[in-house]
Image 1 (cartoon, one colour):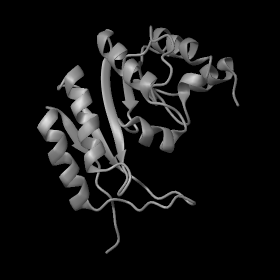
Image 2 (cartoon, rainbow, N blue to C red; image 1 turned 45 degrees about the vertical axis):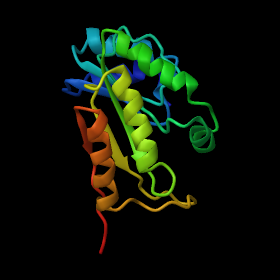
Image 3 (cartoon, helix red, strand yellow; image 1 turned 135 degrees about the vertical axis):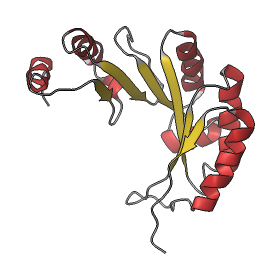
Length: 178
């Protein structure tokens, strides 16, 4: 892994307007606040954080947070992640109350996290603010997992459900071989 100084050195040769902190879970990196500050101050770029929402580090130099709500039902969330979702939902509300751009997303997994769960997630978001942008991502098969990707029809049905609760939602389509 690169140290903070090495990352900054690599960035010196790149012309960029936005940095996206993502992959695994960026909030567990203790250097995140410092690097975000450098990117803001030295490079005059905006910062976006993609997070699971368990922890909220200093966001003084983060412009936008995309919080992934895995599931609203705590039992499903625990089964999927091994942890309760209580802190995630609390942090969603906390982030909404901050002066920061907040978006959310969930992964549609057929026969697991699907229409019924998407309805619960979007209903929760709508109670916080029906204008928070929300995106439904299709599950992409990962070796060893038993799930299949959703069909376009399943995704569209989930989008129809989201439209009952939210004013700003999108989805990504699967690219499936027929």
